[in-house]
Length: 408
Image (tube, rainbow, N blue to C red):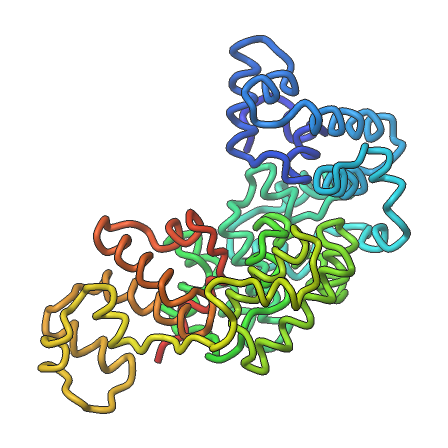
């Protein structure tokens, strides 16, 4: 729970975090500084450089309209997102929201596929659900976002609940397995995809490519909290995910059309996923056609890079020299898992390094990171004992975690 009195219902906090103007840790710093300096939160956040005065003015205008019951918190967040990305006044952004942006508004309920899983897993209780429901009814925000904002459910666990609820809907995972997986995420602090893999509950198939929402995330159009919010709406209401992103004010119709075209090109093996994400971002930023954006990429789309084999990654990452590896394995046609097992048994690398190399290999093989980036990240992680997820994020590779756990 947030520590300052009555902060759970603080409209400005909900608006700033919901519109992605600041994140929760920054909000905590702002509250601490506000109390220490006896200064209003909005002034402190601007003074510390966390939010520009330009964006804060729009947030304050939105706060006033919400407090006067002129608009819902959810609608205010959508307008703020548009105002921030398109350099509009708040009223202009609000006027630009047609009826399609209001379609995802719905009456939340205490019991749904997501809260039921969290309740059965022992993550939350009925009292916590009740508090979140009251806030959700007051603000129009999704229950999941409220539970994370109020610190009732950690973001990592909420992501696990959403992933499991979706897999249960798709009949890829049983309800009991989903509950076990959510508990394991809470206990181990592993990402849900790692838990599903390590506990042998579910494993993604290779050669899938990114899903539409993953491509938006890779291109930097949505944050993790945005993604979770849209997935929650998708799970509970069954709306198409691309349309939800438009309705939430996160992307435009043109971005959706380009993303769908790029997905088909990935499926046809015309471009890699990392190429597609970069082109999608550049087409929007530079206001050029998606084909021009693809033609300006470096490394170029054509010819397509051949991904590394696991043997090549071990050598290129300077984990094992080629001569030693050839002596150990020779020309034997071994699978990736067999190669990994042999180098582990020979004590050439330890289990942690091997797992990092396998995860990098998976991402490279599936086209989510380029060859050069793959080697650079692997070298850094093994040299400095760095966390792979943190390194991927720091270098701007917002790759789907599920595709790191597919090796055979």
